[in-house]
Length: 117
Image (cartoon, rainbow, N blue to C red; front, side, top):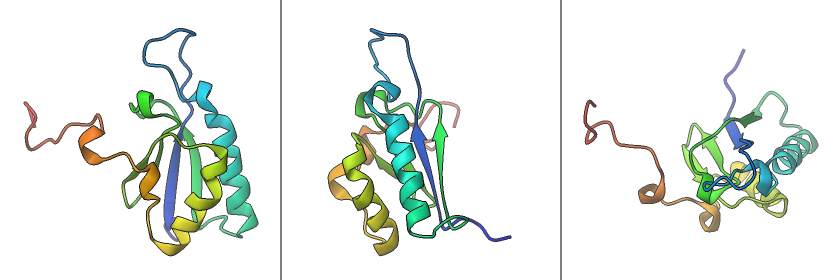
């Protein structure tokens, strides 16, 4: 068995109505994941690239959030209209810069500089 060339995680987290952080589910995450999976099938990439729904990726304010591994590319504000461009980027190796969440805006902490890290 081979490893996936790319593994995409699409936040589909659902929060209660009116939650101050919002949620990706309310921003079309299920449709984005469905279009990504359909696009992968259309390109014959089953078993090569995997798209999975995920619970909260902690980028709620920037949703729909998608992260691509192994490159650790974080995208925000992704819509179904962006799916062809995202798939093209996997093929070309060039990130979709307009959708990238800048590192300094990600909510994770650097273990080298965080307390207890």
